[in-house]
Length: 155
Image (cartoon, rainbow, N blue to C red; front, side, top):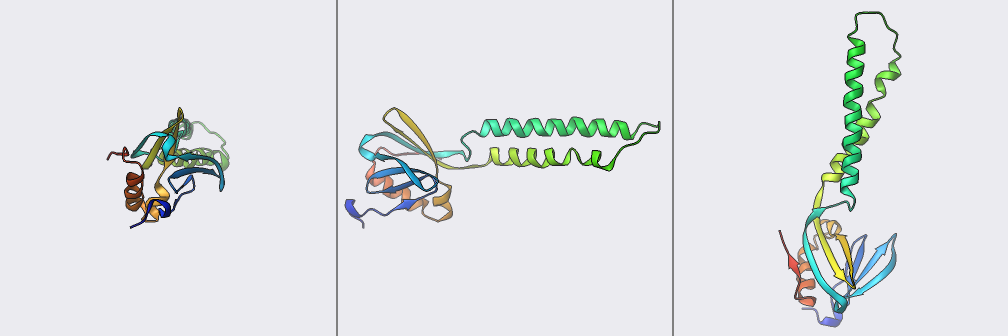
């Protein structure tokens, strides 16, 4: 078993946990270090992978709504018995918004395990997806609960 001085290191794209501290990173640059002594609460739960998931969901829904209205308009134009002239490019206009809108809705609704760290009046929302992919999630939770006994893990 590891001693307090030789705790294992856990690393994701958002943070590094080692030596009883959480180092927050952005673009591989550590911009803040949070010692566990200054942490008031840590919660691990299922949450959204995106921090601004509602904005992304609304954008995707808006694009898909545009696509529906545009396709309905195209169908009414095509069903018109009078002669008309339409370029083939006009039929492709709904395609790009449909792809972007569908992708936005899908990524906005994805879920994973997240860790919420409350320290010094700030709340940090950290995604644990990298640890799950590396098969280190269970050992991370065990190590963190040994270092921070008030850890709350919910399903």
